[in-house]
Image (cartoon, rainbow, N blue to C red; front, side, top):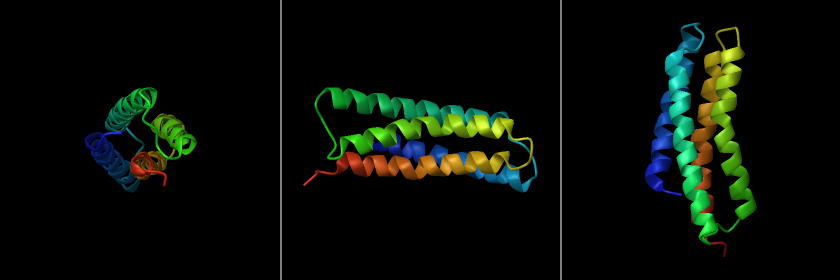
Amino acid sequence: MTLPLVVAVTVVAGLLALAGIASTLARRRIGLLHLWGAVLLEVLLLVQAALAVVLLLRGERPADTPTFLGYLAGIVLLPVAGALWARTEPSRWAGTVLAVAAGAVGVMIWRLQELWEATGG
């Protein structure tokens, strides 16, 4: 886990959540800006996941490896699930769906960082 990527994920997730809320308040469905934001967020998360897997393969382990892996798998799926659900939502609430997914990513990435830094004892 690298702190600069954690910060980058947090910033992109926050901006995506704000874009989703803005589209909800404007009573509009999500657009290409939202989708590209979700793609950027997913790419950052995949890079972070790849780095974490490399570190795990080298023998570095967080104190609670199963929990860490569960969070890692979940966080990678959230932007995809949020974007797919938001695209199929015919109402103005599509932005809210995407904002909730992005907000969850913003929280989960810091929990992953905490799990990685925990010494276990």
